[in-house]
Image 1 (cartoon, one colour):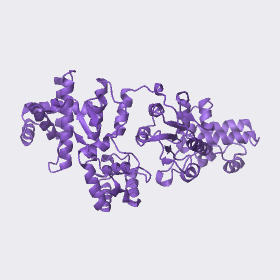
Image 2 (image 1 turned 180 degrees about the horizontal axis):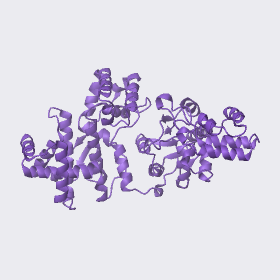
Image 3 (image 1 turned 45 degrees about the vertical axis):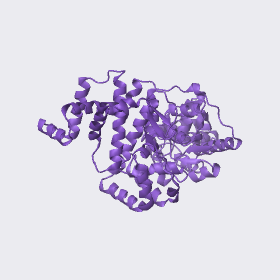
Image 4 (image 1 turned 180 degrees about the vertical axis):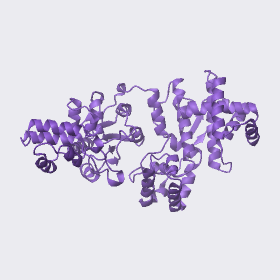
Length: 499
């Protein structure tokens, strides 16, 4: 069984590994991460830390989805304690003092556990003090009768009113300087500081490990999870991208797919993955072995359908000499035309207003601001006016129903399973072979090139390749450079086909 732990500033990772060495450790949890670790075969998930401001927070729905699939989910210390208190009645297991205080509403605010911390490269070292640790330390001093109740109340009120990012010992000293005996209190405070977040983090790891050794998996409770269009969209988005973080312990396949982020074809591969996911979810494509099969391939056999595919491909291809781009465009065109013909038989999805809006957006993107430029573009792309109109309608289908996944507003999802659509996509367009060749023969050249692009384009390369920020990109490249890449030769490519 695989256990995944989301850990950040609450506990040093070396201390965490001493408590639970068998676990796989990841940075603080963010929206979509639960789906990604489920796709890696997680059987236990421990949430300790999580993002809530710099990135979207983990959804409650993700956790319920995991629990309904039979995965045991623990929470403690920080974001984990919050989510466990909120989802206690639905099967999430809370551990520790902070969890209990949230559960019994002795504390209610998020800022009780929030703090400012450094990056993963600096081991998420805390910079500010979480309010819950200050509160428990002050209460302990009150129990020992080292301070008066009035002192405790005023000190905690001042601390609470400080913005969580600025709540440091230095700021606290400045804000409380008027209190009697505050200087001697700070001497005691420093030596007797109660780091409850660390205590609870160790405790939940110990509990999770003891359950692992006893091998007592949770029973799936499917009734707690109700599927929604928003959740299906989140699931699709996360199954259409590789795993977020490069770690040595990742399976060979996961590491291999992450490398796709270093290639120019990555963005269009994501689009293929999303398109496949949308059609598979609504039951238009079925998976047979390593083949994706259209349920009604007759849609694509007509002369008109082939003409429409050709029209739409002209909108997608920027470099006709790029084989991967041509293959990608052909896949996307087939899917868009198939969906166009499928939907038009059941729904009135295209009207003049929609076509006009899409056309105007296309004009802006291509800088077409006159009749002469439009005629020149048609001639350049060997299109007549009727083909152009059809291409705009297909562009609407592609953007609105595939990229934005608004199809779930029309058709109820049929597929509930997790499929790695991204791995299918990079096989269909041939990117997997390019990755293997590049990293077998040109590993360091490619990494150097990516770093140069990052510097030259002022971090735009990182953004275009779906990295959250430039630091993530640099750190990723650094990990690739420093890691043993002997596993590359062990990658077994699976050849997918689109029928």
